[in-house]
Amino acid sequence: MKNPSCILTVNLDERSYPIYIGTNLLADREVYQPHIHGQQVLIVTNTTVAPLYLASVESALQEYQVESVILPDGEQFKTLSVWQTIIDALLEHRFDRRCTVIGLGGGVVGDMAGFAAACYQRGVYFIQVPTTLLAQVDSSVGGKTGVNHPLGKNMIGAFYQPQCVIADIDTLSTLDDRQLSAGLAEIIKYGLIGDPDFFCWLEQKMDGLLEREHALLAYAIERSCKDKAAVVAADEREAGNRALLNLGHTFGHAIETGVGYGEWLHGEAVGAGICMAADLSRRLGWLDDSDQRRIESLIKKAGLPVYPPESLDADRMLALMSVDKKVLESKIRLILMNKLGYSVVTDTFEPEALKETLNEYGRATS
Image (cartoon, rainbow, N blue to C red):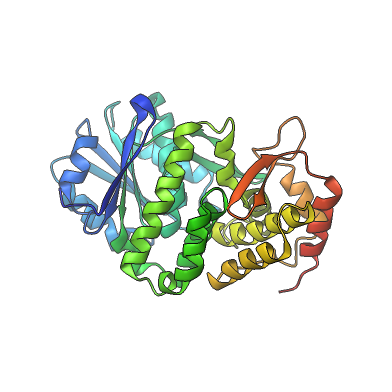
């Protein structure tokens, strides 16, 4: 195996698995071999990633029966009907219970491939090969898989852990600037849910990250994955503090659903959502004005929006937020910041304060 710059472990007892972070990993057969237990491999990718990286992965897996499914690219295709094409391929090629499904692409591909692996014959092996920054630092780690529904994002799915995650930093060289910024939103999130030193580091290094300095990206990916792995190990199925990983996401998912899947990238919606969570936290007296300005400044510097689209007013946002996986007993639960760099899961905020935030951001125009 070529030496990854870093190997982390997600500690989940018998479901523990490594995260390989490095360069020149996609075509390295030795990184895959320990995690493939049968002879059949299905690579799930999309129309953007396939021309760039499918051949590299196939070359690493020449000793296996390898088939591929190429999905359309975009959040708007993260549906049950598109997902079924993965199941169709597994059946058509008569894949058995020892087969392995590989998700080669961004978060949409990884979520759909993982959900197919979870469902096919009640569970087959699964490997994540994320090719976007957002997927490398967030969606590929932790076992959340699924598809969207017109009424809510990620409302259909399963917790299903991969055998391993293979994050090849070289794939970020073909990522466009908008996708890079989308990934930075999730990285900023880690600095705000319990890693204030990382938040300060991001304030200092954001220019270099935007310029794709290799060492800075490698460090940001490693630290983000460490932070997420620690949270997931303590709360695999989001019974408690794992919900902290959803900072900005209740607002963000409402934006994605409200404007139509694919219009805003997930990270763009999360960026605006983090700013709204910061505003509400300030209104509750948990952050001061300077804290909120620092958060908003870093989101802007990363090239992300700080306001939702003009088409979503306060009433529409509130209605969409009420259809969220974190809603319990009809109460909206939010992840808010009780101090810069630290967050809590709460449903005890003042409803009037939430309305003030939604009104403030609902009428913003830039």
